[in-house]
Image (tube, rainbow, N blue to C red):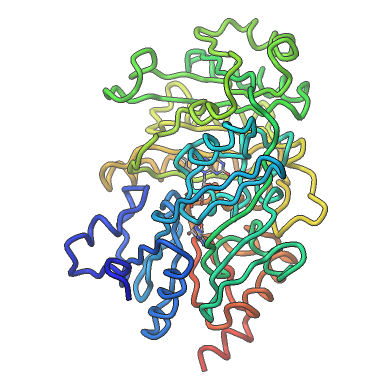
Amino acid sequence: MKNELIVLPHDPNWNQARLAWNLAVDQQPAAVALPESAEDVQAVVRWARQRGLRIAPQGTGHNAHALGALAHTVLLKTERMRGVEIDAVSQRARVEAGVLWGDVTDAAAEHGLAALAGSSADVGVVGYSLGGGISWLARRYGLASNSVTAVELVNAGGGLVRADAEQNADLFWALRGGGGSFGVVTALEFTLYPIREVYAGILFFPLERGAEVLRAWRRWVDTVPDEVTSVGRFLQFPPIPNIPEPVRGKSFVVVEATSLLGKDGTDELLRPLRELGPGMDTFATIPAQELKRLHMDPERPVPGAGDGMVLADLNDAAIDALVQTAGAGSHSPLLSVELRHAGGALARKAPGGGAVSSIDGNFLLFAVGMAPTSEAGAAVSSRVELVQSALAPWDAGHVFSNFATKRERGERLFGDLTYRRLQTVKAAVDPEDVFRSNHPVRLPAAAEARQAA
Ligand SMILES: Cc1cc2nc3c(=O)[nH]c(=O)nc-3n(C[C@H](O)[C@H](O)[C@H](O)COP(=O)(O)OP(=O)(O)OC[C@H]3O[C@@H](n4cnc5c(N)ncnc54)[C@H](O)[C@@H]3O)c2cc1C
């Protein structure tokens, strides 16, 4: 076994090795593995299995909350596997398991190409794509999982396999939306799109105008084509030095949007929102890779707590419920409460798509706050629950795994039929339940009983 591939609790670098991106999560696994290659991953799988340990693959730990306790588990962190290859001719990327979105969007931009990256540059490509993946181009190009063309993975037997439309097609289906329950992904291939520039920006209004602005945004989204993807959001910036001066310590309701129609094609669309008189308007033509800053996500690990939900739709009463629980005067400790507009290509099941190929619901909510102490985390979590229960009448009846930070029932994540099919794939590729995902696909009851016997 190579030096430093496995880190154990008595090793000097233990506390560093077990850190998640979400610093509020105290990960206490049996061991941490830091592979540099697919061969290293195979060695870790053999090492863990010889000791009867389970394996939890982790890219960054953005969704570490949902993993839960890690006793008897090797936390396999892919952060050293950072290779990116761009094939400009076929407009495809092949990335190793630890690659972050910022690495891909910068490399793709050199060829005039864009990827279906998330809002944050340091989210892991693999975890995001296995969960579906909602980008700033989502209403035009759909979930990122639909653009995945091949997955390379180390399975429970320690073998390196490729899954695509021709080989291991069931596994390929399961991996696109079904998450990390089926093995350790070592590399991913996906389609890039010929987009150099986008017209994008933010309209800022005082938080006190929350109901008025969100209602106007709600009417507006019905008028825009799939080329426009937008977010309506409450933001309460803390008064801390690393927040830029113009917004530091201030609270806003904002509309963030990206358009593929250029300035001329978009300005007319934006008119009703601009007529509301935003205090700040940052819309501009920007290089596509700069979308990573549009959402103002933290660019380094932070302690946080939050959760999401899928909303079937949003009406005035839903907006009022949101304002009462998270808007001006609500004393909410939440830093951000966002509503992402879905629909468009997100609503259409992709032909030949995977386990999750569309979003059944018009809006996605995500509410989050800082959790530097357990008391602050508890206050944030209880406010997130308050927001979720206020919006329960509009709940679409299922959750989107990337925006779920708690353990959810498989049926609620995937729907009954899809979940049963995922369980069948799980039983075929990992009958001893070696791999632990943040949102696990459990073995079917019969296989679980055999395993327990
Ligand atoms: C600030 C922020 C911004 C975000 N923005 C977006 C967004 O715009 N759109 C969106 O869709 N989501 C977004 N998310 C959610 C994000 O996509 C999920 O948290 C996702 O799970 C993160 O993947 P990761 O690899 O970075 O995190 P991890 O916590 O490392 O991984 C999550 C899970 O993915 C699986 N996994 C990861 N790597 C592997 C592997 N090599 N093999 C097998 N399984 C693996 C595991 O089951 C793991 O538990 C955001 C989250 C945050 C905190």
